[in-house]
Structure formats: structure tokens, C-alpha cells
View (cartoon, helix red, strand yellow):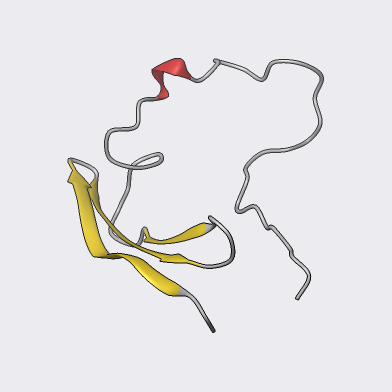
Amino acid sequence: RGARPVDEPYERRDDEGVLRLSSVATYGETKHTFVDRRDYRGYYCPGFSRADVPPRPVGPEVGLVDIDHVVGNVEE
């Protein structure tokens, strides 16, 4: 409710498959991107290279494995 389209649906492809993406703008400068990964087998997305990812965690272990999403709440 109240979201505005930013990016019409588009695709990104590589040898690992295809990602389908689309974005909407909500409050402030917030942009939400919807990602359909069902036809993509790669680690993250086309063009991403794991070469810069540390080979093992840096710092004390905290038990965090993956980040699914981040939320920003605002008062109405």
C-alpha cells in the first residue's frame, strides 16, 4: 500500500542460471528489491565473486550463518 514501482521486472543471467528482479520504493529513500532465485544455482548472483570473501570467519564466533533480510520499522 503506497509503494511505487522503481524497476520493472528484469533478468540477470550467467552460466549458473537466471535471476528475476523487480523493485519498489516505500518510505523515505527505501527501495525493496524482490528476487526470484528459483532458476539460479549460483552462490549469490551473476557477477558475484567469492574471491574477496574471507576463507573463514573473522572475530569471535557468534553463531550467525546467513542474513535473510534486514527490516526498518517506522512510526505512522
